[in-house]
Length: 298
Ligand code: NAD
Image (tube, rainbow, N blue to C red; front, side):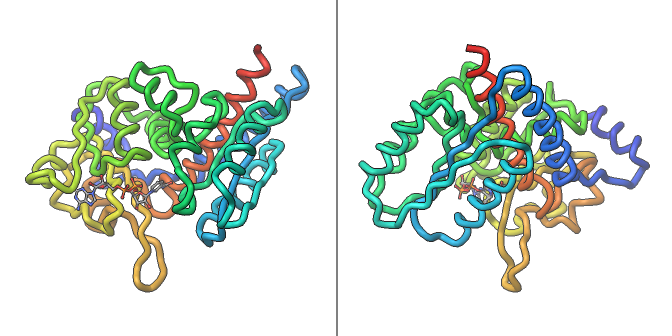
């Protein structure tokens, strides 16, 4: 695509721009912090986020802790619920019901995965869609198709925000997404389509994957398969967004893109870590702020 190639030329012939998700997320947090101050001064509202964790999953515990720290940084009120792994579904539903009616809480997040005895859909369905800052409620997913949900799922929305902040044109672009999960691939496809991309979604049964990915102006890898996107699967000048978070045998993180093979071909590329990951957390804050703003205007 001419514009993308031009972007590459702007950066210098053989230079690719490495998208700095940490920087953008930090920028967003400081913007949100300023807006929170104004919201508080003008309307007396402080955005409130409730985070519910059921069980002891170590990764989930870290995610929850980081979300609470983020809230502190931007001046949100936050409430953490740490429930034992054997918590009954009815207890969880009762807590959600209370939070739905709680005026201090604008966002409710149930950390996934939930223990097996709890019906995840029943829990997600119970959250008031206006407070569903993860964007997983069927109302918000349905509304995504008509373009106006209360909240967008954080990871794909974070990708849209990155593209926006790097002035990458979505309109008219051939966007190829590898992965069709409910939390990344599918909602991202709809968000890109709404913004006038021509979208192709690939998955494990896709034939001739490399042929499809080579047509991409914007290529998003969200397969959870370590470095599966090789250099010869990417066209010169493409924008490459790597959602994958995989752990190498040595414990280090790696994406779905073979970064060293792809970096010189791409016009823009996200690293792992430090690309899409930090944006997911920033979008949660943004959604919670928007929820509080919506309440303040009612
Ligand atoms: P998932 O396992 O639910 O879905 C993976 C999808 O990729 C499936 O649709 C599958 O068909 C497709 N796929 C897998 N291997 C493939 C292959 N070889 N060829 C073509 N398609 C293939 O995964 P998910 O929850 O969407 O997560 C995907 C990756 O993104 C994981 O590494 C996950 O850790 C990461 N992730 C990152 C963030 C973030 O904040 N950065 C958020 C969510 C997920």
